[in-house]
Structures are given as structure tokens and as C-alpha cells.
Amino acid sequence: MPLQENLDAVNAALDADDTSLAVRLATEAIASGHETPLLLNLAAYGHEQASRFIESLGLLTRARAMDPYDPLILNAMGQSLSQQGRTREAVEAFQGALALDPRLAPAHHGLGLAFGVAGDAFRARQHLEQAIGLAPDFPDPLGSLSAIAFKAKSYDEARGFAKRALALNPAQTSAVHTLAMLEHHEGRDDEAERRIRELLARGGLAPLHEASVRKLLGDILADRKDWPAAWEAYAYANHLVRVTYRPQFDRPDVESGVAYTERMTRYFRAAPALLWKRSPLGKPTRPLSSEEPVRHVFLMGMHRSGTTLLEQVLASHPDACALEERRTIEDAAWTFLHDDAGVDRLADIPAEEALRRRADYWRTVRGFGVDPAGKVFVDKMPLSSLWLPYIAKLFPDARILFAIRDPRDVVLSCFRLLFQVNPLMYEYTDIERAARLYDGVLALTDAFADKMDLTLRYCRNEDLIADFDTETQAICAHLAIDWSPRMRDFVETARGRNIRTPSAPQVARGLNDSGVGQWRAYAEQMRPARTILEPWVRRFGYALD
Image (tube, rainbow, N blue to C red):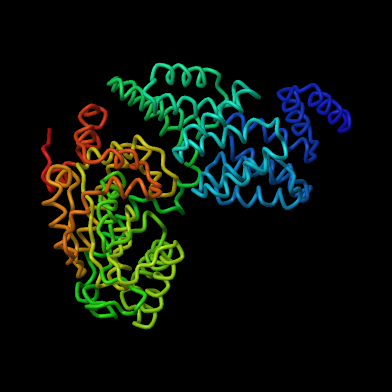
């Protein structure tokens, strides 16, 4: 069939709102040797609907080469990149589309979603609201706003956005998902489950969205104590995440989280202790400048180990201020720790460079709106123990708190949650890999402690819950600060802060042991992980059964 006849047939299908036919005709036209940006875009959409995102992006790349100024192609590329979890690239594609057509509502929606995934709620809302202003009958931005409002605990607003979206499209998936989350939050689990199962039965969900829906289903089933079904929901959700991110992280040129811990452990077990026990800055006994705190605390541990609770407790101290989970040190540390040659350079870092980088760190902290001068400053970030060589060289005066919780509960909790995926978080999508990451991080921390002069204390979450005053007094002694009874007011502190982690609801409930021993309900499914974790279970004094 001649090209023009192909195009006429495709356009007729589009005019009749028969997208499936248009995709099939476009795919057939390409197979017969015809290519135009429209045909490639439609065929790419067909691949995207079948979760063949690499093939989709390949066709869109060819389409853009043919017409680099078509905003619809850039918008489609942004959608494909978002589906693959390549958020930074998706933002660039959507911004490129809007540079060509600032009134393209789908691009504003896509960009809003991408910013939401990246944790930038302000810009996410900004672009979603622009999409609504440009296309009031477009339901998807309303559904996306409902999800953002729910995450911000603005439940009435979330419900309002969801209902507006469903008035335009009764099957709008984000709105349906938000209503199910609201019902679960309100204890109406029968309604939430019915809504979720209807949503899943309709099909057509993007893999990452389906993963989020299935995790919610798992939570509902877990609340009912239907442990096998809950595990099945969590496992399938993680399977969807792994499949989506596999092209990015299951590659020979990408160092996995487990591989990083293994490489660094080998390095430091062989490293000369004398080289790492000293810092070019010596061991300062007072702040090196008037802009520094009187006490610098790094609060670390695995995710879901109690770092958020401990941070709120410390933030309640009258002399303290805390920064929750901001990238203050990781990027700078990675410039050295990405390979052994870089670690060698860090071992001999000159004092001038160490001072400059230390000053850069404090500028970064202040850039997040925190003034640490004269305070006890707490920098909390799970897994920041991975950067301890950098900390030891630049901040030899810092105190280290490492949060500990039953390793089996930690690994289970990480498996049950959705994180923004990177090579470390990717490990949480498989229960055995999650356990290997735990084992690797703790073994690496031991290797660091053997070779470095670290002022480090392990803090068991269960001890904090069982005897709050005794444990917090011991923590204060480690930090060389006076204990304050105001530390008991951590729930009030938490209510006044924007906690950006999944632990926020637990912290708001105060001290409770509801999360202790949750792994027992999944003991059989966790058997491979339990074998890996057993040495740490023993090490930190937990019962084996």
C-alpha cells in the first residue's frame, strides 16, 4: 500500500477514536518500509501499552530524528521514560516538549508526575494545575493531584480532586487508587479491596502504577492477617518493579548495592589502619568556624530501622536541630568511592581540600533552610554509613548513631514498601537480595569501624520503645550533651515537621511495639533471607525464633 494510503487509513482510524486500529495500521506500514513521525509515534504507543518500553523509546528516537521540533514526540518520549523509571530523562523530555509548545497540557501533566516521583511536590502541583487550566476536561491531572494531596495528608482535598476526576472519567486510575487509599486509611478495608480488585480487573495499568496498587492490596490483606495472600501481593508488586528497572540496573556496567558493599569491604579489610585512623584535620575539639554546630551528629542505619523515630526524638532536644533525609554528602562522597582508585585519593586527601569540602557541606545544609550554628545538628539519612570513609576524613569530630531494629523486620518492611529506585533500592525488590544488602552494609560498617577512629554507637529501636528514658540518656551521653525531658515530646515535634518518609504515621502514634516481630507472619516465605540475616540477629541480641 502506498504511503499516502497508509496515512489516510491511520488518520481515519484516529478520527473515529479507534486507537487500536491506528496502532495496528501504523505498525504494518512500518513493517512494509514506510516511516513518518506519526507512524513511528503510534507504533511506539503500541509497544508502550504492551510494556515494551525499550522498543517504544527506540521508535520515538527515530521519530525525533526525523522531526526534532514535534512536541508530541518529545511528550511521548517523556511518557516512555517515565514508564521505565528514568525520571530525570523524562523531566528533560517533557521540558523540551513544553519549550516547543507551552500550552501542551499532556506535557504539563507528564512533567508534574515526574516531579512528583522525584519528590518535588511544589513543582508537581504547579504543572498539574497548569494542565487543568489548559484542559479543564482532562481528568488525569486531577487524579494525579489527588494522589499528591493524599501523600501530603490533605485528605479532604485528595477526595475532592479524585471525585472531580471520576466525574470526567469513572475509570481514571489515579483517582480510583486515591479513593482506595482513603478508604484503607479510614479503616474501610472491604470497600478499598473491592475498589482495588475492580481496578486490577480492568487492566491497562502502567507497571509501576500497578505495583503501587498491589502494595496497597498487600497492606489490606496483611491487616486482615491473610499473610499468604498479602505476601503474594507484595511479591508480584516487586516483580513489576524489577521488570521495569531491570534494563537500568541489571547490567554489567552498573554496580549493584550488594556489589558496592562487597568491593568496599574487600578494600578496607586490606587497608592499613594507620592511614584511615587519622584525618588531615586532626581531631577538632571545637567548631572550625562560627557557622558550624557545637556538636555534629550523623544518624544512619538501614531503611525502616527506626531512624525517623530517633531523629524526631533528637530534634525535640532544646539545643538541637535536625535535617531529614537530604542529600548533603552522598554526591561528594561518591566522587571518591565509586572505585578503588578514588578511595586511594580520599585516603590522602590534603587538608586544604578537606576544609573546602567541609565548608561546601555546611553551605549545602544551610541551603536546605537549616542554620546549624551553635546547635547540636543531626544529619539523618539511611544508608549514609556507606559514606563513612568520607565522613571520617572530613568530619573526624562527628558523632555517629547507627539505628538497629530486628534485621528480619527491617528486610520485610523494605520488601513491603515502594521506594524511589536506584541501584541500592533496587535490591529491596527481592527478599534475598534485600537480606544480602543488609548483610553487606553491616559487614562494611564493621570493616570501617575496624580501620577508622569513629565515635559510633548502635541504637536498638526496641530498647528505645521498651525504656525510653534510659536509652535516650545513653544516647545523650554518647553525644556529650545533657539529657532533656523535652525529648519525650517527640510526637508534638513530629506534628510540626514535614516528615518525608513512610515512617511518619508510626512516629505520629508515639512509642508502640506494633512493628516488633512482624516477620514471624512471613517466616516461611522469608526462609532464604533469615539464613543470611541470622548472624546479625545473634549479634544484636534478638531471639532466633
